[in-house]
Length: 257
Image (cartoon, rainbow, N blue to C red; front, top):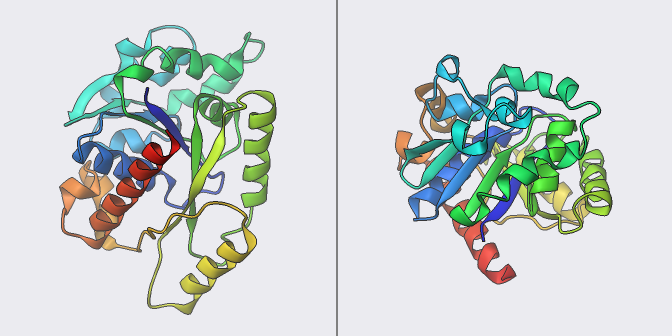
């Protein structure tokens, strides 16, 4: 049975989508069957894989409001071992559409459970907000990965995110756990990055990944070429970091069994 991981942080610009894209691609690279779900109305994960959003007739929005089934909006094998549920800006209207809908927190879960056995990993890129879309992702997920940028305000808003995760766990998804925190945009040349890492380790009672994602120009360039970093520049420090993170995530899967 596939493991479902939500990548979430309501703070924007922390490397959430970058992590969702590149962790997924690096898991696929080592032979894992991966489904990526773009739950962000900005659709950056969709375009980050080179998909033209204007050409899509069925997306996760149509699936959520019941106009199509998951299979009808699935883009299969966009790279080897990896398929995508795409998103467009239309998804921002889902919040309104879901008002009054029965079991609205479980709509994604009900759809994804049917496909779960077809994948080793299902990675959900959440929107940068604590919305009904994020709640749907967390209700569906087994665990949450929280990317944190190595900057001064790193801890700001994190307690609210953890509170939301705990609420979802209490009321909607008793199995939900925080998979771990991953540090992004680390700059080894600054004392600040090191201080942020130490500060979070000392103040956050959560599992923290050993792999730290560096600030890397090739990582920043890759989405504009519609490619994950391991295909755009396989030898870059960004690609190596996400390969190490994928190995850590894979090891956690087997230790949890």
